[in-house]
Length: 181
Image 1 (tube, rainbow, N blue to C red):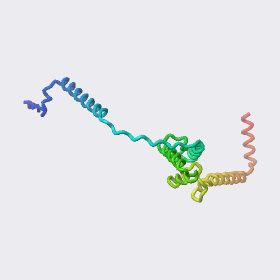
Image 2 (image 1 turned 90 degrees about the vertical axis):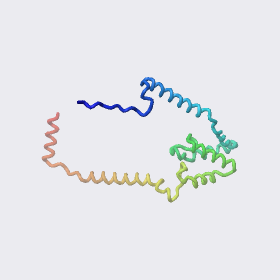
Image 3 (image 1 turned 135 degrees about the vertical axis):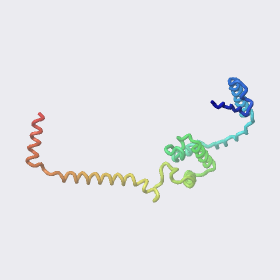
Image 4 (image 1 turned 90 degrees about the horizontal axis):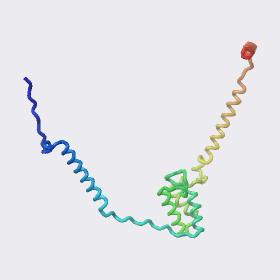
């Protein structure tokens, strides 16, 4: 005889509802949660943002100096653009620092030294010729010279190692050339 299967009833009262009605009820519940979330998001007051500090007003000569300094410093985010070319937020902050220091009456040298002290020599687009940067300045020329010397030495070695053809090799080359024409 076959054993009769006993059906277990779910613990929730949802099992009595038709399946279609259950899916409709879940959709309505999800929509209610979504609408509530959107209302909370958009109707909750957000904190006021602080207005950015206005850039100091500079004279035309100071504007020119600021532009020159921005072209001489590297954007630390982009690394292949100057501060004047970059649109990165850090570049914008660095340009504001330049303008602020110019408004305070600092010289170009003092401003460059400030950025070098803060970010290192890398921040300059033209690094200074110091003992620590000698390899940077001289390295490419030294590698080019070494490569040229190796090329010359290799070519001289190859030129001196060829032996003249023997009589058999000349005859074979002549047969080969005559048969091809």
